[in-house]
Structure formats: C-alpha cells, structure tokens
Length: 489
Image (tube, rainbow, N blue to C red; front, top):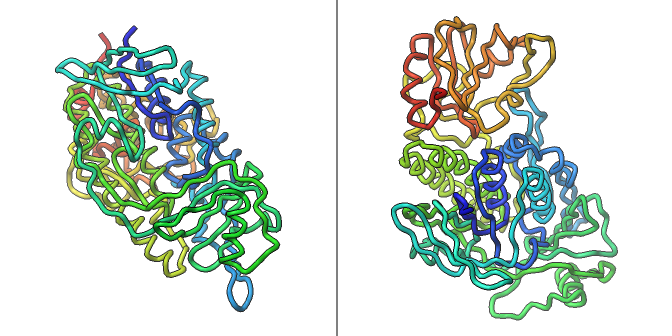
C-alpha cells in the first residue's frame, strides 16, 4: 500500500515526526540513506520544552534515564582550576515541571525514539536513499535506491528531514541563505584516561572535554584552524590536548566517532513547496552554542505532525501553511540567539539562562491563534499551555499534562455549565474544573488566570489556541471545523 507520507531522514526531527504520525494512525515510510543509525553525540542538550514534547510522545523517562544533568564546568586558569555552574538551575514549578537541561548524547536520544517508534509498529529503513521525486496536484512520486535496487513510491506528501545538506531542499531549488561564522571546529566522542568524570573540563576558549552520562565517553570539542588536515586518531587528539593544555597525563585511548566542520547560520527561504515540506536541519542550520539546533528540529516536527494528520483526515490544506508561518520565525529568532551565545563563548562566557529553555516560545501572531483583548492575568492565546497538579473527581491525583497527553485537542473549562459546552467532537476532549477535575491547590487558577465560566482551547502540540469567557464558547465550532475537528458522523 502507498504511504500517506514519505519522511526522508531518520534523525531527531524525522523520528519525532514518525512517532507523531504513528500515534495518529497515518501511514508513512521513514527512510535514511545511511547504512545504520547515527553513532555520534553531536546534539547532546535536551532543553525543557523538548522534555515536555518527549513526555507527550511517551519517551521522557527513557530519555532522562539515558543521560543526566550537565556537570559543573571546571575552568583551568593560570591561577588554578575554577568550578562553576553552566547556568541558572531553578527548581521545577507546578506550571513548568522541567527546568533543567539534560545532557544526553544524540545517538542515545535517537535510540530511545526508535524504541518508541517500534512500540507503535514502525522502524526506519536504513540504506534507502531518496534519489529523485516529482510532484503533482495529488501527491509525490519518489524514486528510492534500496539495497535491492531502485523503487518507485507514491505518497501524498514528502517531508525532507535530511539535514543541512538536504537533498530534498536542493532538488526543490530552495535557497539556504545565511553565513559562515568563521569558526572551524572538531567534535568527537572519545575514551579518555586522566580526567575526572565529575566535571565538564575547559581550557581557555578553544578546547573542552565533557562527560557523556549514560556512556563511558567524553565529548571532545576544539577549535581548529582552516586549511589544515586534522588528525582524528587517538594519538593525534592526544597531541592536540597537549598542545592546548601543556598536560601529558590526559590520553585519548579510543575515538568511536568524530567530525570536523565549519559553523554556519542558515535558514531556508521557504519550508514548503507544494506537497513537499522541510523540517529540522534541512530548514535551518545553527552553531552548537546553547543547544538550540536539535531542540528546534524536534519542535518543528512536533508542530508539523498534527497538521499533516489533520489535512490527511480532511482538514483544509491551508492548515499546512501555518507550519512555515509559525516555525520559520522561531528558527530565525533562535539563529540569532545561537550566534549571540557563540560570540559570548568566544569571550569565555558559557553561562546559560532561561533564554535557551525554549519555554517562552509561542505563536501569538499565528493565524491559528484566536485574538482578543489581552488578559490581565494568566496565559495569553498563542502561549505554551502550563502544567498544573489537579485531582480527578474520583480522588486520584493527576496533572494537566497527563490530560493533554495524546494526539487530541483539549477544551479546559473552569466551572462551566454543562449546557454551555459545545457539542462533542472526534479528537476533542473536554475537562471542566469543578466537575470531572478539581483544582485542589489553586494551581490552575494561578497559571491560567481563570474565573468561573472561563475556558482555554489547547492545541495538540501544547499551545493555547484561544481563551475566553462563557459567551465565547459558542464561537468554537467554526474554529474546530477549520482545523479538522468535526462532529461524529
């Protein structure tokens, strides 16, 4: 049977999109030209907002168990080592349960996502290279080079999640505008003798070794000059450490993976051309500072998944246009942040604050966000939907995030009369504070600023689509029709 979607690229973005489509019963194929899964640590930071995404996708506990919190930074100065935190580490709050970035090597993050995908009955197809495609008004015809020879596949949509050198983007002729940042760097996974496992070790502005919890590896990062061949053997890396540190008791024993690259900041001119879309690094390329690239890619796919499923289920195709409308400005802003953090890192400042958490990103200007007068308290339409502990009417403790978890929309009411609620719809769950759930600690009222008769409509990706009072509920059916949430037949 022909799939509805072909996903080209089985990295974090492709895997996230595949999981989201799988739980929505959308047919797809996830292909990757590589012969096997990625084996490096490259993107190792999982920011708080991505942790919330992983909770919704059912994989957060395994991700957390695969890594740990960032260690203290040990700076080696002329006056001796100085230990400091890499940033502000506030305690979780009822509305923001994840506050601390996680350090998880990318290959373990991808492994956990593949495990979750397998639970949903799917797996990536490695050694399958997309070598050509054509599109028409009804779909995309792709040619895939497989171990058994070329294969033609017809699908309704093609998604390029195939990285910074994206074949899909280049075939479409989409410009990838931006700049090189004048930094050439080495990143490698190494086994090391002579270093404490308890610290992220940094010498000056140009060399660091960070333990990769969940493994026996360190991530080795170093600035390297242009126009010079870099020796990636254990002996060559050991010599590089001696050159930068003057120490001869730190020895690289093994290097399972390594790469030399030039830092870029680039953004695709468009994320969609007809029935072909771009996501992740295929749409934007970041310097590694602040751990923004992988997280932005994951959240691209999380935004795209529910929209693709809705359109395939009968929602207007115009819904897909909101993917670029919402995600491209986010990538543009994050690129600016990554560049600023890179400049700070060059000055020796590696501290990070809330700006890297991605908790404050939202879609207030989106055409999917129902405007209105700004609320003087609580959340605004377009913002991330807060969590809150609540108690079910049956007496068991739960959380709003648990009620939101899954592919559905949620209408959250606060002491709304049952007769005032809209007719039930497929893909919409209705919870009313004071009826089926109780705001025993007042956390919902505090986070959402709700009063009796108020409501909030929560999108499948955890953002507020609309908020309003009792009179506004009657306008919801028109909005829900437009996003494919219809009454049962």
